[in-house]
Length: 157
Image (tube, rainbow, N blue to C red; front, side):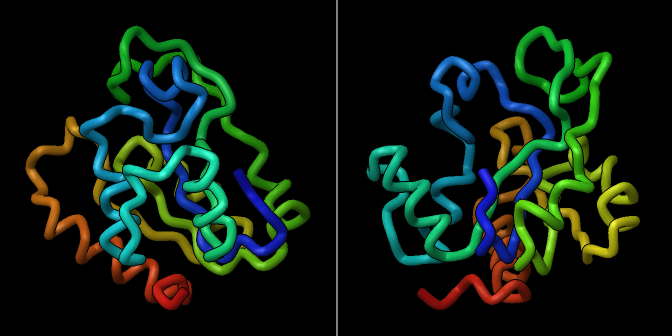
């Protein structure tokens, strides 16, 4: 989900089973993505209907996309991804001309950092919001995500 006004793009690897079934980004109930956004923006994103979540992120300049356009995978774990094909990162200049920063949500996504950086975008790796990333506390994830959102100017309403 990109808009011409997207300033920060968060790249996941590829949607997990819950997200694919729900046709929603970060649909797994234990994924910290929506709670993190809520903490950053002072809005309870988890109780908003999905369409309203998308309105909020568009309005604030956040875009969501995946590193992979397609892949094969049993289950939802990134280490199970096989035969992955990258999304067309070169299209970012056209679809998101205001883009200032690309943040990779976790390690698998970060494997594409050099491809995105080669296009001239500043890139950084954020701790994964996946429930599989239990080694990072919510507060530690929040601090890292806050720094990225601040860098892209997405903390003020």
